[in-house]
Length: 319
Image 1 (cartoon, helix red, strand yellow):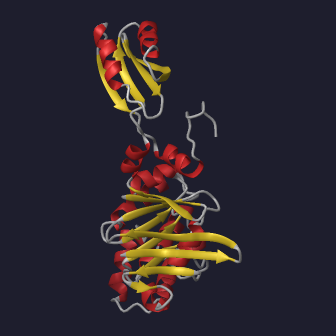
Image 2 (cartoon, one colour):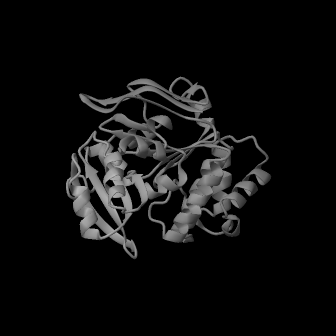
Image 3 (cartoon, helix red, strand yellow):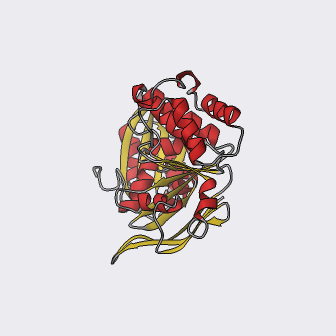
């Protein structure tokens, strides 16, 4: 539905976006992540036609945003970080204004009524937008993006500034919208991306450094040399036994699970697979292994590893 091909943006000698490509399919929610200055906002602005590109293509439902911007934008609903609201209008007046601005041909009353019901703003339609809470304003912003029933929704930081209850409500709404729309969601709240998105694209220094599901990224960036284990036996004796294994660099005791069952975190030399030797030595002492798993990275650790080459715990903690 949204296809980006070798897209670039230069500001003089500075390269803001460097030859990136990715695709967001129909009924897919794609999370777009990047640290400050990575080129995330520039890319979003090129996708919506707000900025022109220096090279490459951005196709919305097969239409190039630069070659036919009017047709391409008919397929886009955009919610910027600060919703484009006219605060002196009522909600109903504003949505009617947006309807006319977009030259929408759908039956006005029923179409706007469905949007109001979907975004749960039907109870504030006659209220002046200035008097609405931040959460309701965000919903009105989403409602204007839905006018005309666009195929693609581009949402920039849709939950910024909301309280926890409002965040949950907006996330739930985005997930529902993702069933019938292609959604690109830009957010710096990593838990939000993990909760809502089907796929994640990470951009850093103008280049895409990852494009996959959170689970696949975690599995590919994690390795067998980092293990979490639950072992039954005397803590100090088990720890000493594990530390004697060749290629073992560090054994950390996390917590007592229950009774004499303790959780250990094993850090072996990178590239080394110590699982067989761990099993051999523990079984020889009759210390049962109740759990053994590779330590998959959290989305926060994935993000840090991709954008800085480091993550919490790799060098003893910190940033």
